[in-house]
Length: 74
Image 1 (spheres, helix red, strand yellow):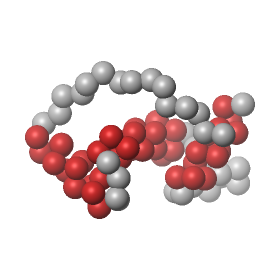
Image 2 (image 1 turned 135 degrees about the vertical axis):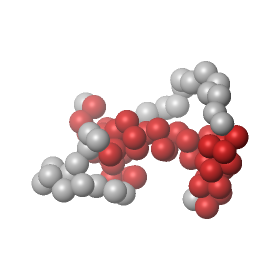
Image 3 (image 1 turned 120 degrees about the vertical axis):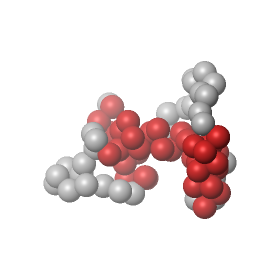
Image 4 (image 1 turned 180 degrees about the vertical axis):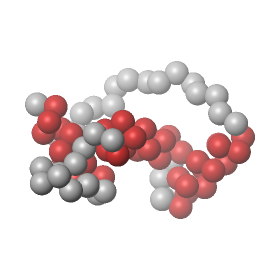
């Protein structure tokens, strides 16, 4: 079962160009800006640098990354 989202990160001030870029990326991905930012942060923190499949190959599927992270958190 996925972990509940109960914590809030304080407001983050960004440049207008970054905000627009994130908004475009979120729209292209069919997500709200908040959900897109959460996914980007999650993938940065747990995905790109820290999680690889058991056989050592990189994993790019978000669902697979989340499953691996949850398994390793136990």
